[in-house]
Image (cartoon, rainbow, N blue to C red; front, side):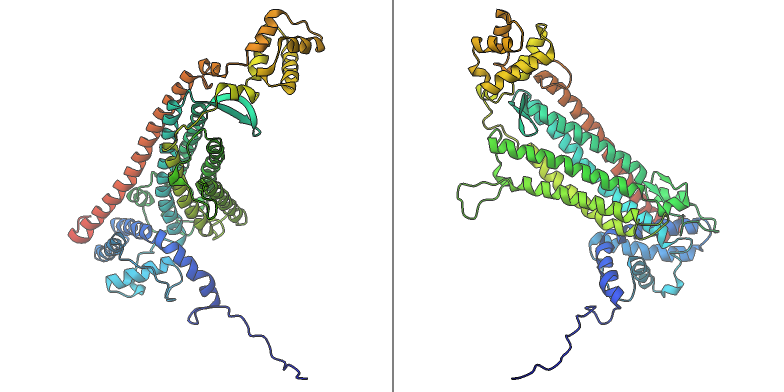
Length: 505
């Protein structure tokens, strides 16, 4: 019998690249690959403003300022043209040193002669470029949310008399309309749009100039840098400027709100398609690999799943921030970025699909009045009609409940109604019996309701008009904000060119 020799198991490798340390190979490389394409352009933009400020303040000689500006403008041109590559070759640890490396090469000087980080820390640059990236993403997300609100309102008005069965706890409850549901959805999206604008106001505050967290002894002008980079204001606390995370948490929360609300409506829409109240648009479906008749609206399932992942990104953001010290740390700043960027891109895709579904919403076959009555959805109307005749509400509620548990409203009889009242110890006049038999037979009566916010057709149309007006106003404001940061960027580039190429400071 052969005895196996004692051989030790081979050790799994701790890294893939021999030229890197274990830490660099397993974290810094992937962190660089993930972050650099996002933050590098904003880093160049912030650096242009910083060098302009240093030179104008007399902290840098003009000749040196012009050299750095020329180099930074060349780097910007490469990012704009798409020629800039982001390769982690192991010579620098992160995008910040990568920027210095690229700038020194462009200027034809060693990195030891650079002044781009004078009176600036990686901390405030980090915080600044994160805000610059997130603010633009936020405006783009908000524009889609507001547009979906307007389109939901338009469909609400068009379907203000599209009568359906409304559900609570997934059981038939009361008659309502497709328009009534969509008018509510429009309001929810508008709420999120307003919240995003509020988050933007907190987000668009410049931390640039706060340095590591205490500022600097040099006579810098933080407000100048903030204005050049399109911020509405500059920090009031240099500590909170680099350590603050409130804007991250608020952004993560509103991103999760958007997809959660959309997921809830997706589930309702899936039921409407199943009931064949609305069409299942082919462009949003997949077929079955085995069942030829299937047209599966899997987009709605995917959207529910997307909402779950966005909620997970929010939870990860809060968990990272909550595990940090109340000071600048990677837990509370750098490590949350990927969750916010990822969630932001998902919100864009989610809302594009949501808006597409709203635009393609087509009524197919609504339930007829008899079907609505048979579902029991009109029995509240019977109890309210009896209450209007002076019967105490709880008594009316109990009697109608007893009747509907025995038979569908269409099958009630005068004798059965009289007996139900007698069993409850009440006399049923002819008027009461007639009201009981008739009050629940016309579900379309809800279309005549006049209360604000009700499923009354005119009330829904008024609501929809108000939502469309609010969406228009919000959309204009969002575009104004986007225009301001675009204009600030163009002005910054022009100012930098004037200084670098024409010595106009």
